[in-house]
Image (tube, rainbow, N blue to C red; front, top):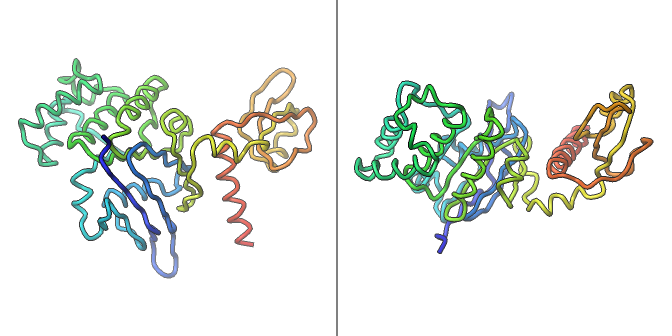
Length: 305
């Protein structure tokens, strides 16, 4: 039976700067989630990492509150710290330590009993498939192996909430697929928050997507519902390369492929585009994401006029 867990963000905002130059990293973010994996999707600079740091009690919100099982973590940070696993975007290792030494060091920082840590580390190294290289220097590990060590250190205390921030950046395709499978195995018995700007990571791993841009939560949806929003708004066309600059100014392009007969493009438009040789196309999740982001940008531009 899955443990009853609840993470609630109530109007969370984070503001930087003084009264003369105020910059919002987050604006009135509300999110309510339980066990399972949720994908937090947004472009670089959207506010994803700030939101993760707020949940992890590294950063305090300027306004609003975060509740863990009904307790405001600003009043009692340890209530979530004791059950938190966190893999930040800038996770680093000590290159001269091996996996055993590094994980025992992290276990000591987290206050784990030495004997319990031994058992936990053995289990985790087997789980992430690094038993055979546990005595190799971390500096000699590949990027994918280091990310798996990052997951292991985040799981040392068997967390009820696991946060992974841009975990597949810089990984090769094989390592990214392995990492997604690893996250999928962890979901179900805990809350897993996967923060990324890579749509394929979310598409492969989650059924619950929250899109954030410019510090605002734009929507929360299943992949199916998100695709439904952009249905009828994706088009394929073949154009000469000379038309590309004007097409880019007028539409959001999701794909450009050079062929002998011209540029084969996919574009997003609310109505039938005025381009010859165009036809409707079935949308992808990436196109649904691009449509959501571009629509929010247009709304912001209209508000500034």
